[in-house]
Image 1 (cartoon, rainbow, N blue to C red):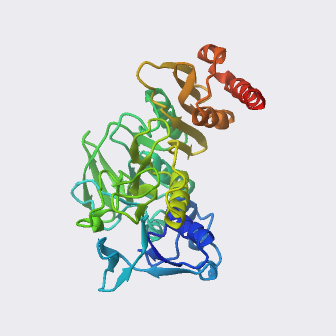
Image 2 (cartoon, helix red, strand yellow):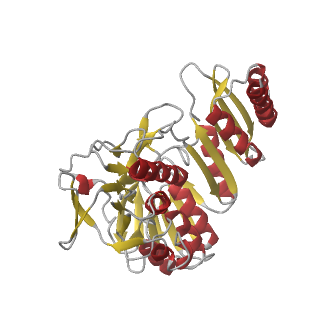
Length: 420
């Protein structure tokens, strides 16, 4: 049995390791597109800060890890897949045959159609190569513009602030991290950043980037012109699926998979940021671009590839935990609420504390928080289990901060039920 895995990020590496556990004799080939050992993009900010060397981003620290596990790591890009012949074509002319194929190619950072976006000094922060270029230019006191204040943008923001650059963040939405915050919470994050000396321009777009004598000039739709030694673009990503054109594999926003991570073509599976997996809260399928989901996808895909379709998924919980210059924000499940639901909210702007609970009947279906990490485990646990809170729901509507008590009560009720 020959397992071929396209992509060497967290999904690809975890899938390879679990396949080896499930099938000690099978051949496993892991295709890495970049000329570097498999690494985690989520570790790049630590490299930017200087907390770790480039090698610290590697997913496995021992150089002989893959060899010892009998996993062949090959640095090659895939140009196409022939699912009829069960063959993968590589750039350069080589090809690989497979018995089972896993697509774990993740996503690629995209740049908006802005004049000057491809100039030297304008980079994404999506690869080790990008990170090395940023480190060269982001010296203390340099003028840096960060385009985008979404989840990835705010992770990069943290690293840039630690490098003591003069940082300006430009975000087209009316608040920061709009995909995990409402207006109140997103605005509180903006105020926190401004208090840290970071300039944050929301409801603002970059119109153009031009070369100057010694720096770049960034023009915005509000009429402003900003000097920049470095511009970092963190305005979004798209799933890496172009090489699947003509393969018969169904692609929507990502690769369409079933509850076993199999695609529309037998023996072809997908996992991670490229896969439209099942969401726990809605039962619908879409791309959940977070590392915990990528790892869970990988485990399920490996099991399905090795043993067949023996265990399906209930779906993965959509969740985000973000550190923005020392302020922790979280969101879980249907944090934006659901039709016919109710909302409880606690706001303390002076202390930068916020808690929002979303209910459907007496079930917690979503939650978000800011500066209140003590509630993280309770929010996740109650949403994942779908526990009926009973009278505790009314108490939480009045006092959201009593969430740990409600969680404990639900756990005790569950234990009593199991003991009967």
